[in-house]
Length: 483
RNA sequence: AUGGGUAUAGGAAAGUCUGGAGUUUCCGCUCGCCUUGGGCGCGAGAGAUCGUAGGUUCAAAUCCUACUACCCGUACCA
Image (cartoon, rainbow, N blue to C red; front, side):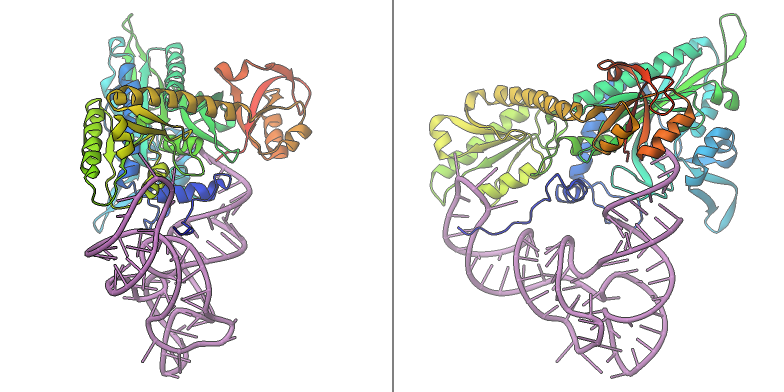
């Protein structure tokens, strides 16, 4: 047996290289489409996407949302109605200007986000307080002419998987509650795929264009940079006034509605891959893995035992499929080792090996992807063992991810301290909430302000102190390098 | 958007400086044999208008110009 040098994934410590190689090797994304910032989902990656988004759908549907679909094209006059909103997006809008060779009378924007596509319809749909709250969402592609360096799944010109929810409420407080609920749903969603998150209120200068305020869900990538993987915006009655979304209240008065919107994109896929993956490739939470169990038969020459091995594989496959699992028997003409490596690269949570030795014992070998733990399991208990193993694996993945996450949050008393810790993760420091001081902190540290933590993120350490710039009373805020 | 780098078979590289037949290596792919408990081996084969478009030249992967895409930064943004 020769020790041939196989092409290997770069180590995860070289994160950027690892990430790009892995997307290609594991067939998550093909980045060779010849337009900047547009990429292709091959079947394996698309399957992962589908599994993740079906969880998002489940959360929203169970929380009283309904799925709908609005057009990709937005007429210029609607798009241009909300001044703040336009300012935020005008530099990155693609315009459709021609139908064939005929110039259009009204230019059409490819949606960079869908507020201005949806709200003219909301004006028609919302009539009375009995119609509220209205909670719709859609999962669509959106287009942004990104000037920055694009990255697959992270910074795209076509966001292919933008889940955007748009809600309408009777008053400001009700909308505020919905924003909090949206954030809860997002955190529960990320918890389900074992991705740790932290929530903060974005500073004024970084909120959604046209919003009263923005809450954001962030996670931490292996290179110490933060990835924003969900946002929820309180729109107040800003868009309601612009788009004349009014309803008749209980007293018979026409009053402006209050709105929210919140979104998640394929960054959720990027986060899953990046948080859990290791030097061998993908490690996927079992629920979303395109293949959940790979069965590798161990066969020898042409001996009679092969038939027994193959039929045992088929029978185990049928048992597991019967329990709703996605199972593949890998009976290709290759050495078992080669198959192990391939399925590890693809992040298959459980591998089952069946050979003559196992058959003799009425057992199979079961291997966990995250820990590589390997043990013999009686064949008649296989379904229960696999399901238990998957539950345990998800729990352990979250524990490990959370430990890593927590270990990279640092408290800083001064700007100098912040500079020393630069780029290692998320810094917590005190800020007086004056934008001038905020910008000063960003400029000096070279970090971005995520914002004042919301919920559990701020509870562990002191949440009050003196601003690291001016010394006035302040609150804890989060700083990090961002994607 | 801007600074730097890169582009040769499905992937990775050598060849480019100093122009002379698409030459070579590794992986992957196809077929046959042999094998299979952590990336077997042997043999045969397919696959490239050298990123695109112009230009210089008797002759361009190689020199020149422009464009496109990708990678690493920076400003801005999710």
